[in-house]
Image (cartoon, rainbow, N blue to C red; front, top):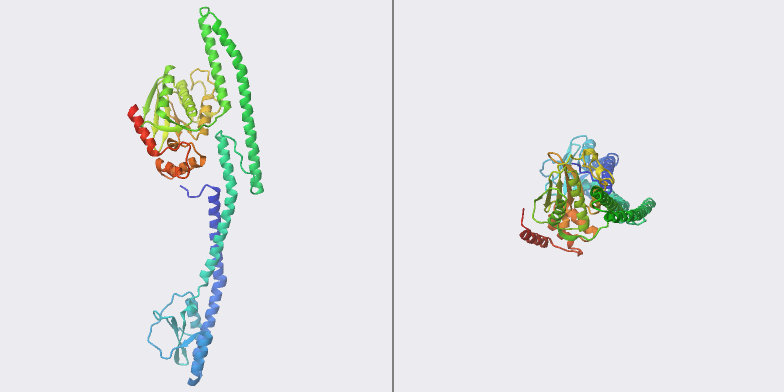
Length: 496
């Protein structure tokens, strides 16, 4: 598992932060080596020379002049001369300049001097020998407490922080239109309306937005032209087909009943093909989701399929599932998947399962056909693509059933998976967003917020409740209300 962010903003932030950290480390090392250490050494040498010189001056001058010298040392250098030496032990200080100062003192005096730092005292004392006599001189410990590295770190750190913030703001300004473009591309890929994104910002971003808007307009025009063309062709084809149908009805049933039945079958097949062409060419138009019971829809579609001679086995894993979806779109997707399973299931029973809980809403349609080769799983969703004769029974299919189902699924953020079944066959799994159990006929921002809440591990009820606090939806339904409806449906329908 990697912690490296996937977004452009996150990766840029990490890159800038690491670069600034490296810059700070190199700057600090260079400043300490070339600036701080030489300055500290020079200052320590000067102060040590003053202290040693003061001790020698006290030794060489008459006693009556010591008072004036002590006052001058105090005023000029902040040095104090102890009147009476006191008992103490040598200590080691942790002040920043202490190592430089101690080394310089030993060099100037030519011997190892005692440095004394009494507890709870602001004065540091130094015993300096001069011609056989020892003088104790003191100074404020703040003389050794100045900490240039801290100032340097603060200066470099604040500068780096300001640079990081400014860089992130600039990157965010560039990333925002790219995010808008990414969202627009996803919407076009799902077959939705063609959005127009603002043509503003830097010249490169504005040109990219302008190109996308022009491309999306061209795609919209092509789609409209395709719809008009296929609608016209279908209309022109249906006219002679209707005439043929009327002619067939006028024939004598006793003359050649087998031939008349085949003609009727061929006419029905051609009308079904034309209907599928129209469905695919018209694309998908989303409607506001309405409340429905998924199990009732499955039972209704299964009953229609049983009338055609298919054998189905229904399995309900959870209580009745109240869901909000585009009824027409969901019914078309399930009908196409069921018809595909019946067509390729080799006459064996088809198992239908419904999973409906806070973590998953999924419908599985399992057949016992020859299965789909792994390399063909994605290809079967392409229009007019059909597998070889080893997969399908003889049929007059157009190869548009799965293409239409997939187009509708993409539009509504559903997922269709064709999985191999244990023991042979195929499982067509239709996965629906769990959040749609609670009525999301609202904005895409609200649906996106619920998805983020779910990904963060929040229960479905809490995830939806948080998104409903800010703004009323067109169909606001609470989690408690939905669970109450589930209970009522369960009491009416019962469980399998």
